[in-house]
Image 1 (cartoon, rainbow, N blue to C red):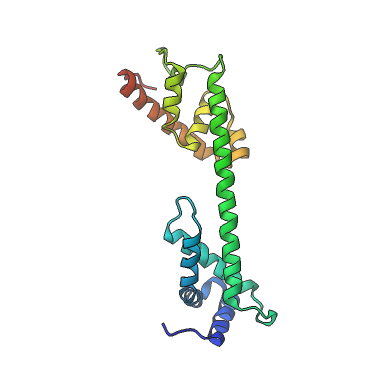
Image 2: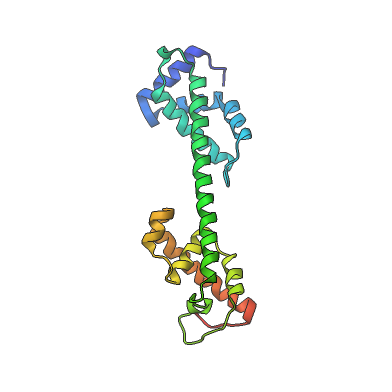
Length: 203
């Protein structure tokens, strides 16, 4: 693609503004011009579990929104405006990830406190059978380390320590997500019993 000059850039911005998502070629041309900027931002920041495609998708959305907001009469250049908006979007996503991490750390700490309570049921209470196993609380923690954040919350629901509503409000996991996680927890628990105790009782 030939290098895009300032006037051509304004024409592409106008196309995106006027035609919205239907101006995909104009939007892609703008993205292609600013890929060095995008990759430079990618090199300065770290987003957990973010792949290149995720970065480019975010950049595509921000480029589109920048086209809608850009005023060529303001005295600023489109590239500078896009860079500012893209970096602000990255900062916002980093803040959200850090907030989730802090919440996850808090939940993990709360889980440890929960394990110290004398009335916590044995992990064998997950079983829907008459067989009861005396599993130490230290092994309870060992099992919990195998769980993801949502699975850990699902375990607390199974144990009656939290409700689906609690998790929806605090962590914004949907009921369906937590219910699916409950099934995974039961499956992992069966595997845990087989590995640690040679127990094959079905849950």
